[in-house]
Image (cartoon, rainbow, N blue to C red; front, top):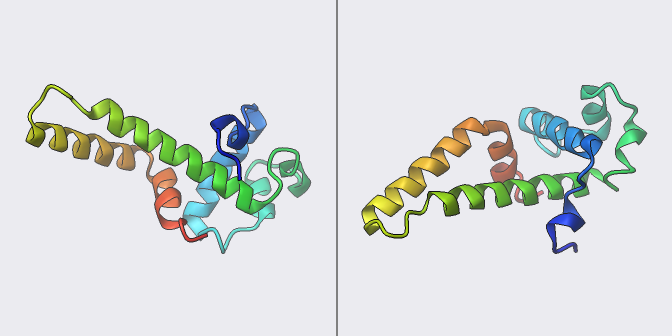
Length: 117
């Protein structure tokens, strides 16, 4: 299994568009209820257009999960005020994480609900 961000997240614009489209469709239908055809159709692409970027729907979900967890971790780390007291630190982290979840509700839904997939 890939271990670095570069191994998992393709930097191409097409791959980023595929991830965003997949997030929308996975959030609407769930991973199991989504086909690669549906993801490609969201972008007016042929289903085969996904495969140069991701070998499978599973690999695409893995990339979304990896990226989503990395973003959430960065939010939590950036929210931590190391010189504040513990109560303020925890409250700030929880508030910022909740804001991130609300601002990125589709991504957060996929990252949290599709862990078993």
